[in-house]
Amino acid sequence: MKHVTARNVTFGNDLPLCLIAGPCQLETRDHAFMIADVLAKACEKSGTGFIFKASYDKANRTSLSGRRGVGIDEGLAILEAVRNEFGCPVLTDVHDIPQARAAGEVVDVLQIPAFLSRQTDLLLAAGETGAVVNVKKASSSRLGTCPMSPTRLPRPAMIKSF
Image (cartoon, rainbow, N blue to C red; front, side, top):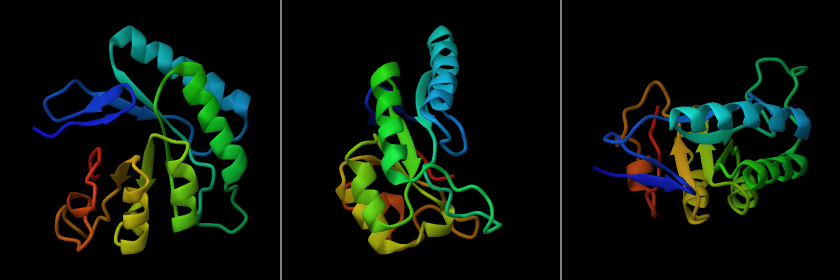
């Protein structure tokens, strides 16, 4: 059975459920802290592993006028503060190679959105950071069938492909 560890949380099919949760997009540090506090306490009480997930840039909006988030600099600072304050791993999505490299220096888990799950250069850049990589699977593909599927990353470290 394969296990993947992000800081103090270990995932595996034979292990207890772990929760990846948080706001869809980061709004403010206070908002992130309020959500992280509630989730961390609930997970601690139930003995559930917890990874805080939030996006600094929601690049996949259906409307050009939709809010996208606080941006990479402020977003990574907030995620780092959440990790330091609550002791939980943090996860964010990345959309291009420079984002993967910058976020990989701060977060514990890089998530590749489904619509980018076949972008070879992005997958390679994410894998090279040393962070755990969570590849969300495009609905039209099966795990292991893409040339650069998570099982074929140079340093395979993924939680699960959804």
